[in-house]
Length: 406
Ligand code: HSE
Image (cartoon, rainbow, N blue to C red; front, side, top):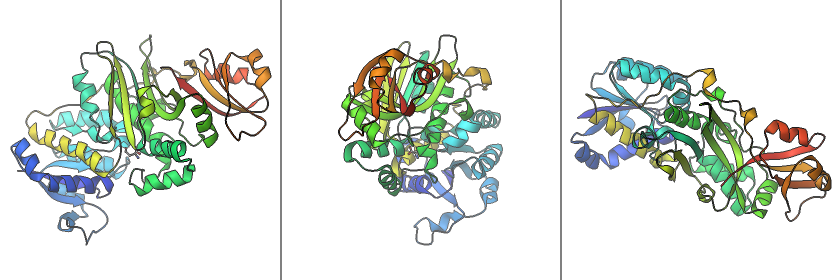
């Protein structure tokens, strides 16, 4: 019998309790050992919950209880979650988490501590919700040199963009729906401004390239500047706007990692990833292209990945699996200012005729209801952002998003 404690009884924590209860017999059979939920730590009481007898408010009880073998951390953030994770690992307990902020900021140190205590620190649920991606990157694709990762990594923003594109909903109405469905972070700014996707690409890039890449090394833009006008122009040229997290291995060995809205061609598989679904496309020098797809947020999909990690931690209690990477440093990442791509641009002003003198335009775009004094186009040759800004000097740039090449 393995005993487990859950820290944080929110969307994911309650999902973990539910999956453990609902699938207990099945889990016991697969693991040849039952998993029992002993404690749930939360500041709140849940008098109406069937799990209320397990609710406690004091982490000391868990830390000091030798019966607790695995601690599930679903608190989120890098405050109390970090303190409790450090204490649990130091007490010789495995920790399983869905907390991408903590892994992205402190993963290297936490994995080292887990190794020192010969326990597991597992985080499959931290990226892509229920999608298996951490183990495939670390294990199944281990024979490859990974050259690029490109993913739709945030369910909330993908949901918002899909609802804007398909139903013409305003940004606020679509965000409200995502929150009602339990997809959004406690503070949805982390989703909308791209921080959540940034943390996830940090984790994937660290795993794929073997060095810790910290959030502050990853230039990040969210979807707050994407308007219905941009959605319509993208549609006019058979493309979709998606928020992508990308990590590209450059020739000099540095990693170009960033998060930004992109225009992607309708025939590219990532373009068909809608609603709360996430997808991660990986390029390896032996496998070629491979893509992982599934529900990237939500209570039970995320709990599915957490509980599988719990089972792994229990099943390997004598020989833990280390899903680790090496230390980071400033020179691991490349400078985004050197990255040249084609661009979708929307400017204020009747710039149309003058533009070809300044830069190569592949095509001008039209949409119904466009106001006079607005020009949208796609550039032809790859340009750095600096070169684009120079070419458009004096014009007010309303939107500038990179184009993902097919
Ligand atoms: N807020 C996150 C998302 C939850 O929308 O993708 C899953 O990490």
